[in-house]
Length: 584
Image (cartoon, rainbow, N blue to C red):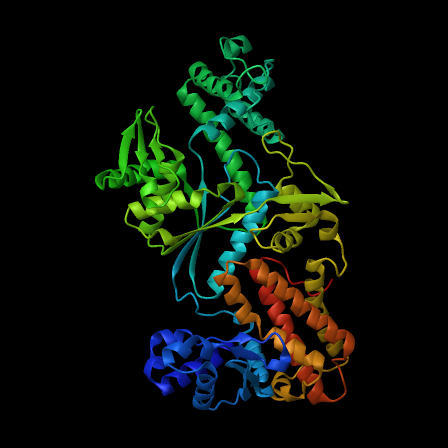
């Protein structure tokens, strides 16, 4: 309905001619739902926006626009309010026609063409493969997967990608942590490094290593520890872990250390892939940082920057002139020791995304990446790519509560709740929807007891129960020996005149607009809030009026409405990655 009204406005502007017939004016032809039904169903402020260009007072222009509107069976009447707002009052036929669209399009209802096929690469989660996914990663996964679904539904060509940080120091720390636990399993007694990964998952990987290598990688504790600098708290834990990594390579050899690293990575990635798969989160591509290096993409990016004079040398390091492109400071791309930095990998990776033909790059990252956007945009711009093609959505932290008590978490010390543990306790549906209840840029308090409850205060239960209630009504219909006559129901939507019916009609037909707004604003939480509103409209209607009345015309009209509501609930839940049960 919104789109049809906007088309009517655009045609009226074209009829008026002059500046109003320009493409920019047509783009301004937008309408929004009225907040107060007394002011119509939809309203537009187009006369106020175009008055200056038209050389007219806003209210006078509004009168001209209304006079030029083509006749439409959807519009009962229009009204000019205030300084020049145009209010549209829709005919009963308008809602009936939209309800018919819900039945006709079924699972495709709400899908649109807003994206015009624009190619979008959505990278999300991309957690370091040095431990299991925790509850914070779960929020990123739920957000990214749902945003991808919504963008695809409104016409974007979306690809989902996970970037594997499988190069650099953190994976070396994982490998040496595994080797230390392996040595323990072999019977060696030695202190575990303060900066190592302490979770039980490392012991499990070490057991796999022992199974694969036997005692071939065993070295005496005295040889491992000889000459190492002191660990924390007496010494520097960073210097100690680096020295331990070097010692491991020295004692077992680079090739064997590579095997330990490869096995550790393979085990962690298998766990992450399985966890996400069970969570309903899938990727078209898992992109390895090592692959980026092997492909020459990093060298190509640095060569491009060098060619254009964007790099300089200072104190043995190679720097990128990031401040020339809006960043707060210049960035090192190659360290004094010749190692390329993470930043060099980041800009090369994003250049490679553009080279693959993606017009828009959306990264979903943790809240601690706030300085990331300016520096990578600077890199893209310096390499001749539009900086604005990169969009970064930062996901704020998650706090778990049980019985009003906050659960402490800290990853390196292995004091964290994994995504798998959370899913096992509250279920995938509760995880997906609870993660999305608030805007991604706000911290989230996750109430475990509420997520497991079967009450109306639990939004998962409340929305799913609305869907199941309609299924129950249809079972009752069959038990009475009756059947839903769709054509008759859609032909008699004019009978849906009660306040509860009008409220349900107005809400259910808002679904396409909600999806567009959620897509444009990158706001999956808007869909959650909408589904709660729609569920409330259904529950209120159910409690106020019987659906299975004697009059077949009224009965079928009411069934057409509630089946339409059920369809939209199912469509919305599917985009959220939440099931739509037939019974509760």
